[in-house]
Image 1 (cartoon, rainbow, N blue to C red):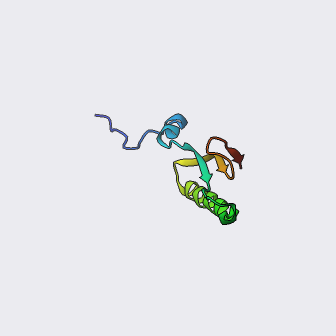
Image 2 (image 1 turned 90 degrees about the horizontal axis):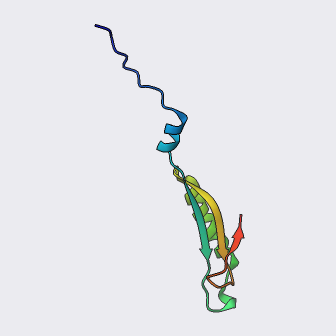
Image 3 (image 1 turned 180 degrees about the vertical axis):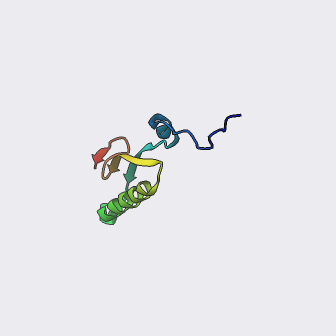
Length: 81
């Protein structure tokens, strides 16, 4: 009787891509404040950096786009990269 190989067959590139699915993630940052004097632009940048760092650390996520809503209504977006 012939001996069988115990090695695993090599997986194709398509199989590896399917196993390691990466989700494209959009980041939306918004600052809500009633008065202009209480607004701090740094908090928007900090929010963006915090979320971007989190997504960058995830194996299954990548930043697709970043949207920031500063002094604009919630229906209008400003794209920032």
